[in-house]
Length: 216
Image 1 (spheres, rainbow, N blue to C red):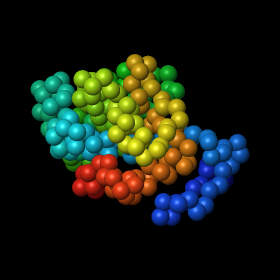
Image 2: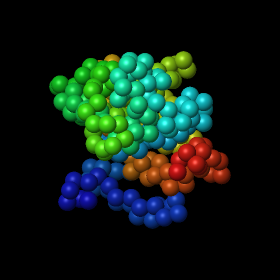
Image 3: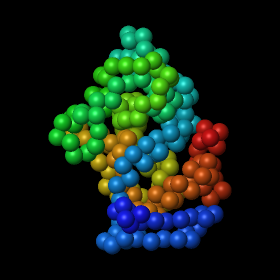
Image 4: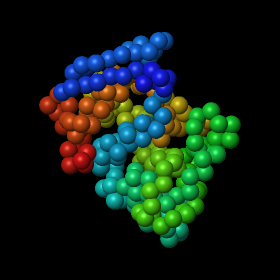
């Protein structure tokens, strides 16, 4: 890890820290950019939104929330599951969507992502990139708007705060939207704590915070 400029190595066993090491100047209090590890938060958030009655199922069509997609035969078929699994068939547009310091980034990443064309049939091909998760961001944003909450607010209220996890800074776009595929900064201990929540399939200290079936 140190040879590759890693900040820390932390090992949990049965929920207890059994090994922890930091490379200077990083310490246990240092929040590190998790980059695409951020994607790991949103499956559980969608699961929680299903439990909370905001989403019908993982196979709900995105066009239920995005009426702009209803007149496009391929976009109309895309489901939330396909967005989460990165096989929705959307173009990626790395120049306008990828990263946090690129001068060419769209000012509203969510709004830009939903305009992208479908380039392969939904559900047929895995393509790694940011577009599907920014579309999810727009869907979550619209569903949570009546509660005056952002996707990040829901993540924190529904999952992170109940398990005692704090984020460091979180990258936002020029319009104030939290970066969904890559925005989180976390300490190693907090990142590991979230990993333990995932390992326990949504359970924490005897309470099922998110449905075990949906987490699976």
